[in-house]
Length: 408
Image: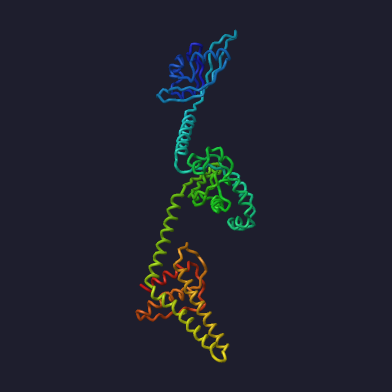
């Protein structure tokens, strides 16, 4: 919009754009005081502006005006002082650019930034802002030879280590600072590598999700705090759409230390309960256990007595003595195996996942309950299939299951 006013502020020229924007025709505007017609308000005192105009011949600034319909406009104004042939100031040429929408958008952006910053700072969830543009460049230039990206990363750990250093941290909120044991965000303004453990596997999954264009990725890992603690966390990564999304990757982190502790306590309680169940089971089977132990002991005594008789003969039969001693050794080992099996069954230990021959586990469990079954006139027939593959599990837990089934 362009108009001219004299030194008294009266409008002497009014262009078509001014007519269209402000709503007054040229006939309506000419002869009017510009400031009064437009109800102009300035960012500085009017007197100071006029003094600057007379001193330099020009002025630029921002103000607010009203249209004929009463709408408020924000304008960038440029004034140029006009002179007559004697150099005397006679008028002012004003050009105005409507920046209402631009100012409103900027104000909305500022308010949005402030709102985001309040949420960022006040959130009890850890938030990390990261720039992954360097990662994008590295992935785009990667030559995988047609291999799947995950397979390539598995075979090239050096690239993964390099990529971790390319995920640059730009900001962290107070919750994450506290989680990591840091005194401020400045300690993080390097890269994500320092927060991840040496054996972290979650970054590869995140990298694949990023390369595949996914918008979100979730996972579980451990953060390494500044004092060396390992903090178990759940995380969600958001990958905003391009073009600027790679520079604004957000990672939301939740500390699950208490949940892990509760899980550990639950597992410990379950182990305690299982141990108590095994003790109770053996208490019920005490007669069977005593019988099983007494059998090899009785055989040892019998073999020993027989060996003594062979030695006391006029001509000792050393071959028979050797045979009976062999029986003693065999029965002694059997007794030792029985005691070992019972002690193992009673052992209070964490579950161990081993490859087991299920036939051996069944044999050991049935030996524990053999006497109990015999007392109730139960004939147990076990017909294991040959060539069964090994199973992975905890020997004691499997034995407990079988004993419970056999005695229930």
